[in-house]
Image (cartoon, rainbow, N blue to C red; front, side, top):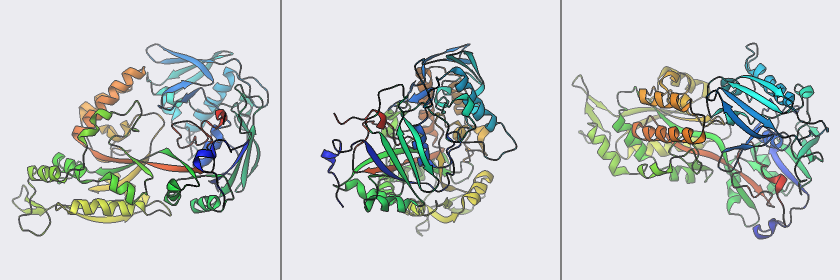
Length: 507
């Protein structure tokens, strides 16, 4: 197998690239109803939205060249570009945006269907979308909220094609050929409103499993591969490959039942101090994760980096906190104990549950690493694997002490579902309750500027640090492994793995 070295890669890509991705469920091209991760990356090269998110995850103009809010954020007016045409040559108008949004909203509001679509959260933010004139769209928000801008990243297609298979898009590429389970061919859109991309053709080869995706790259059947498999991590140190780590929206957490009598604030803080995230990431995940202390991505404008120094792996501090909570090993059996309110001695035993992803045993290994760290100071854990459904029931009913779980976070940075007391059966399974936290989220959801929004996020993270309702562990990452560089974007992220390919140049 021959491959370009990293230094030479950028000058050798040419005008086409072949990429292996995992796809077995996509039977037709439906941009509003994607069913697989990597297919979304292809859609993002074909379909554009009113708003895009830059490298810092800040909303920026795309099909809408500007916007403003009125009535204290209850109405948002978007002014469309006037030079945009879809790939079939028809001009973009406000009617196309309205039709696209209404298609999404209708599906989200249809009680007769089980699958409300990938963009269903638009319904949580938007009341109505109307056309003021040919190039002006007015969005009536359900509440005045800066977070609505993140929801304006839904794809826009011509009004006449919202329910059609493979509708025209306004992006840099068009889908010229598609065979379910086999391949998808993208070619440059000659009607694109920006300069034509240097890379004219993108061929996706579909594979049924993540291991088959990596094998396609290893056997030189493709020039690049998208993978979240830990098996792809081996190429991060290969001299024959370029690797681009991309962030996903999957946040891994250690949930702690705040109602459990053993899990007082001191014990929760002690557990947080005992967890060595770097060890878990390097051992179980082979580096395919980014540690985080908050439910926001590090390095973005949303993350409170000034508080990171307060989160340390500190065994001695953990022991001190446990002692303050009254836990000691009085009988020298290796397990902490204390006298309860009835005058009886009780040991510090915790029920620890996890569920595993298909063909992936990383959480089992993670649970064992955490339990071993807790055992070092006398916290005994009984680890039990569960099905996802089984664990969800235990979480909803509060029948757990510790649980390793993951959330696919929404594009709008708002973890209120995990922290507001009213959401104890839909995300706040820890039964965490603090009226100050509730008030902070209520205030967050009234902010209409980035500055005001960020200020509230900083306050939320400060309270989260002090209350320690649960432990944020890390964001999962994936790898683009390639023989050639095809983008200079700093933030290559899940669902947008072709981000920047349209503007890449070797000159």
